[in-house]
Amino acid sequence: MGIHISTARASMPLLRILLLAIVLWIAFRLIRRIIGPAKTERPKQVDYEDMVTCAHCGVHLPRSQAITESGKTFCNEQHARAHERQ
Image (tube, rainbow, N blue to C red):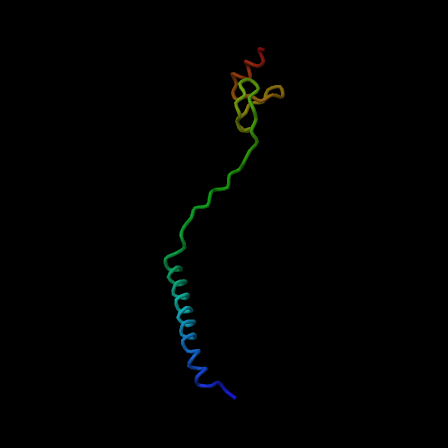
């Protein structure tokens, strides 16, 4: 009961190919680690904010930059005053 010599000889090329593949894979991983991964810059996280419309001219702007007068939003002081006069 044992492995016949002819079977052992037939499996030797397969073992060599498998061993070579393992050695190449290890070498590839080591070289890649030494060189370092390709650096890809991730986009910075953007804080989104609500957009509002100027009641006078209709321009859209971030809420933090808008001026609020009597419940309406404006893009600048002049438009807020102009709307009050109307």
